[in-house]
Amino acid sequence: MAPNENLVVEGIPPIPASVAERASRYTNFRAALFTSWNPARREMLITTRFGDTFQIHKVAAPGAARTQLTFFPDDVRSALYPPKAAADAAAETFVFSKDIGGGEFYQLYRYDVATGTITLLTDGKSRNTDEVWSHDGTKLAYTSTRRTGSDVDIYITEPVHPEKDHLVAQNSGGGWAVLDWSPDDSQLLVQEYISVNESNLWLVDAATGEKSAVSTKSGDEKVAYGGGKFAKSGKGIYVTTDKESEFQRLAYIDLASKEYTYLTSHISWDVEGFDVSPDGSTIAFTTNEDGYGSLHLLDTRSEKEKPAPKTPAGVVSGAKWHPNGEDLAFGVTGSHSAADVYSANVKTGKVDRWTASETGGLNPANFAEAQLIHWKSFDGKRIGGFLYKPVSRAGGPQFTGKRPVIIDIHGGPEGQFRPGFLGRYNYYTSELGITLIFPNVRGSTGYGKTFVTLDNGFLREGSYKDINSLLDWIATQPDLDADRVMITGGSYGGFMTLAVATNYNDRIRCSVDIVGPSNLVTFLQNTSGYRQDLRRAEYGDERDPKMREFLERIAPANNAAKITKPLFVIQGRNDPRVPHTEAEQMVAVVRKNDTPVWFLMANDEGHGFSKKKNVDFQFYATLQFIQQYLLN
Image 1 (cartoon, rainbow, N blue to C red):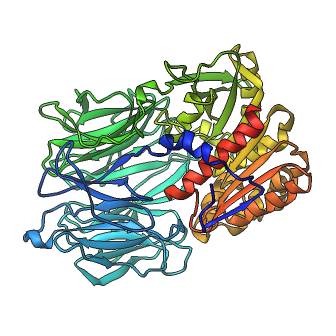
Image 2 (cartoon, rainbow, N blue to C red):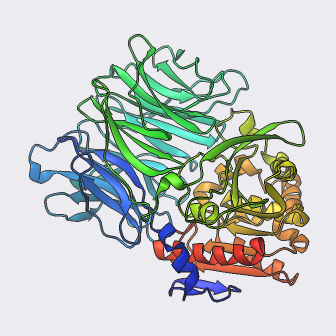
Image 3 (cartoon, helix red, strand yellow):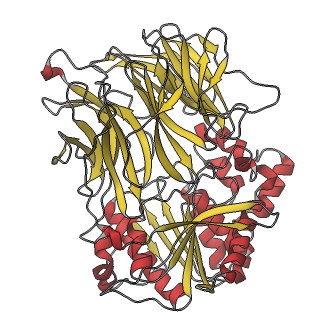
């Protein structure tokens, strides 16, 4: 298998065509994600992949054919219809967002449905995100780095008249996002993100840009806010917040008194997303319960839950109301199902499946089922994760004896592995007999605001020890082979991979680092400007001498002499988050040990590979690496 012209390949031996022949069906899974309801009709926009990248498709009815509307070499994963239908059907439009080469400098475009004409709405250079339509459907608020390249300001444009685009409010810092417009379109609800544990809410006058604070603090407590929506009356807002709680609760804030009314205190898990019905009477929200996702409905008048439609089994997320106030779109994924789009009629309870994503001709019922596991770490903390055991099936490989293990650590670090569809990874369990473990180490979200702080700054090494304790747990399991363990992860999970490889080299067979930092000092110095302070809140400020000394001491790149087990490093050349230099410096220092090092870089990718041809080569190369160093 020859790598394509955009791939830089070093140290990777030729990959036999037989590898792809055996695994190709596992590369042909699809997924579908909801993006927007059509305001005039019961149809929707989704994003899915039929060629090399995800593009916008129209689906005219549940189970109807997917009609592709955008055709770009890069992913298009966001599209929004205005909330009101155009007076003239020929004037129907939506706005979509895309970048180039994974660089994450997103631009906004208008798509004219009647003609297919595409019009650039932004400057073509800056990063433009968090677009939200006004209720009258004429204006679009969004954030942009246009002014300084680092600070994220608020702009308003009129997609039909892009020449009216203008700056509304200047901000300092990179964590600003528009959440909603007030019912009369005079104000914007805006979030200022400082860290995963701290954020502020503001009202911004849409005409003058004047800001007024909404959120309040209780003493020294750091408070985080998630989503935010205006109530129908305009007199208050609904938010998710961990104020006075370990978990994100749904709350109502009265804008006059600034008093909070908590609406979901009976749920001891995070409310992760919500949407308010057009008439303001019902809130649809989803909860994250130990990684699993559930749909709920809340009556805003009684402030009590009411029966919700029964959804398919799996992780439910992204609930969004149709303007008709009856249909609710949401996504579902699980061990046996790729991400697909559903809707529920809240009056009748009827659930419709809008997409049925293909699984390469394979029967997903045969795939491994996620199992929730827990173990005690070095300090007695209870750490959780999900385990997928190999599945022996009729006509397929039969697996006996102790099984090799791959530990895959999520990114973030403010993230969480959820028990969704494994995609290509099903090949590991179904064909190679490997057990997969996805840990949620300290610092993960979903387990309360205290837990998410346990790896901050000088506490960083505690998360490494969580993996060491997991290795101890593996050694106690009669069906797992503690002598054959591979560590892998992407982004911060890549950093954790390198940290485990340097600290516990003798306990693993090999490791695969995907777009991970190798030194948090050089990472913080070189990541995109708008991200630097946001990441310093998590990792520590490298400009402080004591913190710098600590970060340099624990940096995998400075401890590479400890790595004697094979390492595979994967990187995107255009990565704006973790610069390619992080991968290159790690590869260079590990090679000095005469340790086998494979290096793969894509010149047309950013923070992880997204183009199918690149993802496929990465997968096949990883299979070759696993065969050579984990299984043999």
